[in-house]
Structures are given as C-alpha cells and as structure tokens.
Length: 337
Image 1 (cartoon, rainbow, N blue to C red):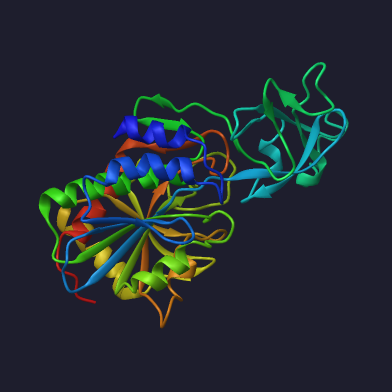
Image 2 (cartoon, rainbow, N blue to C red):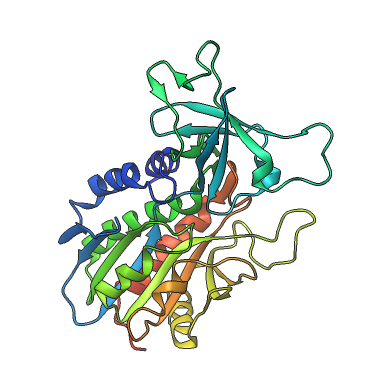
C-alpha cells in the first residue's frame, strides 16, 4: 500500500484534469470490482456486490493546482488558482505542466514585501528559457494560456510518517482501493459504490452528479482533515497518530447523529482508535452529496494531515491503517439507520 500511496501522490492531476490519475486507479480497481465505469464529468465509479442497501464511498482524485491566465514577453506567467492556495507556501515552489515543462513561482517585490503577502495575483511562474522567450518553449514543449499546472514534490517516508504533495486526497484514493481489496475477500451484504471523484478542490463539482446517478441510501466520504498538534496553531483536538477522525461537522455539512453513531459503534466493536473532528474551515464532497436528489445521509472518516495544501503534507501510517480498518468494518456488516 505504501508504494501505491507514493505512485498516486506523485502523479499529475489538478482539478479538472484528473485523467492521468484516473487511469492509474482504474488499472488497480478493474480486477476488484463487478462493474467499473466513468460518468460524464470524469468520476470513476466502481461497484461491488448486489445487496439491497446501496452504500457509496468517495475519495477525490484531484489536487490543488493553477491555470495560466497570461504570459508576458519575458516568459513570466500569471495564473489563477485551482483550489485553495496559501500565498505563504508559493515562493520557490516548482510547477509542472502536463507536457513536462517545469516553472518556478516567484513573487513581486519579494525582498521588500515580507510582512504582508499579496494575493495570488502578486505571484508569477517563471517559465523563461534563454533564447526562446518569444514563444515560451522548452525544447518542443510550449506553455500556453489555459494550461493547468500542479506542484512538484517527491513522496518521502520518515519512519511511519509520509510526507508529500497531494496526500489530499490521493491518500484517500489509495485507502479506498485497499478497502475494495478487503471487501472483495470478505464480502458485503450491500451494493457498494466506490467513487473516485473529480473537481473536489474547486467546489465538489463531481460529487453531486455521482450521488444523483447512484442514489445511495448512505454515503461516506474519505478525505483528509487538518490537525491541531503543531506549534502556535488554532486549537483543534485532532492530532497525528491518534487514529481515524470521525467527522461531526464542517463548513458544508453536519453529520447526522445516526451515521456518526454507526461509525463509532463499529470502531468500538473492532477496537479501532479514533478521534472526533469538528472542522471550522473547509468542507468535503459530503457538502454536495448530502443534497443530491431528496437527500443522502452522509458521514465522513478522515485521515489527519499536517500542512494541508502544501507540497509537504504529512500523515501517519497508524492513522492510515485505522481509517482503512474502520471503512472495512462499516462496509462489511449490516447497516441499520
């Protein structure tokens, strides 16, 4: 599973351009599922089982990124964001475009404007190459207005800690694949739909249509959550290494008590470590799933991650295992809501 996490996290796939990631995942899930298909928006949907109750789980394939909005004659590209970018993490970051061109993010007045960081409009991507500034080429590769980019960072394991870009939510995708493997072996009394969604980082645009088409009786979202165990950060009880984070509320969703209690019950029965999550800023695909058709009871089990939306997101292997075990415990048994 560690190798799969690394492969998915290092893959290129900003919001709206998830196709490379989807093909990697599809190769993993096709031997496991009874049915695999891609919907009109690009969500990858996998079905296992044929029970009466329809249960959907979802992890998103996309990562934060950017899209070129203007390029000047010197080869400096302005950009718009694809997802939430934190200005404090941008200077010096490398960006890879789909054709392989790599640029470096710079900031206007970098050495005179240290205290008040500008919005993303004050940043640019340096894609200039000596002698080719007029067409912004790198060999045969060209960067044009409208081209998307994603950040460049290798995945590093430091003991049981994993560090890298786009653990949000490629880590969730890897967990969901592992859950599918175990469910295929253990069986399930339900019809399970495992969805790998698109465009979560830009407003959960893929989740609602997927839920509309599947019409689940219950949905569970597999995503990341922030932590409160690093220095001088807003207090939050979620911490690395303390187990799966069972969501109760975020800015887009209040988890129904019956759904939360079901998850807690399964964790207690299996002896799986967990903690409760109340996220004051941010939401997941659950925001749009819950309002599909006439409504879907929706819960979420999250992996605690430090430094979310940076090139060095950090997670703990014990939490990854706890989240995996908890999803299997919920999906492999009868559900009575």
